[in-house]
Image 1 (tube, helix red, strand yellow):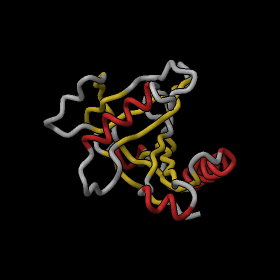
Image 2 (cartoon, rainbow, N blue to C red):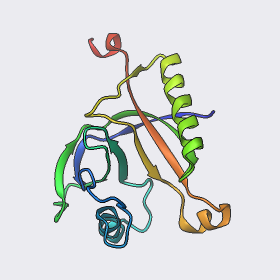
Image 3 (spheres, rainbow, N blue to C red):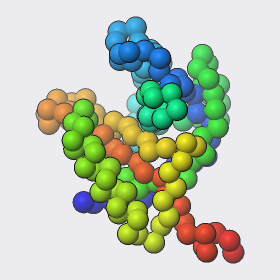
Length: 160
């Protein structure tokens, strides 16, 4: 498996919070409304998607966020601090739970075997996002989903 380590900036994030909907992607679902909101404000040439999803273990529900720029108030969504930090990243097939679970396990194993420290917590959950342009998803027959496992530099490197 090929893994890359990326750094996301600490910033403010507009978020849905945990979705209370049984089908959060239904036509009137919370995540569908959020998708329309952030899609309308996404730049035409983004270098990377600014939206991130995660599973809120406490609420047992999906949540979705959008990293805000300095001049964006995130209205009408709740705005929360996003801690940013390092993430080990790899790609799986979207909507293929078996592939996603395999890639997630491989990513966690990779972090454990690397010189980095694992850093998963309620404040820094595993994140995921769709990285595929629609035309490519149509060609491949599926979207690609990037999984992001939180990690950090070892304490010995940051205590200096």
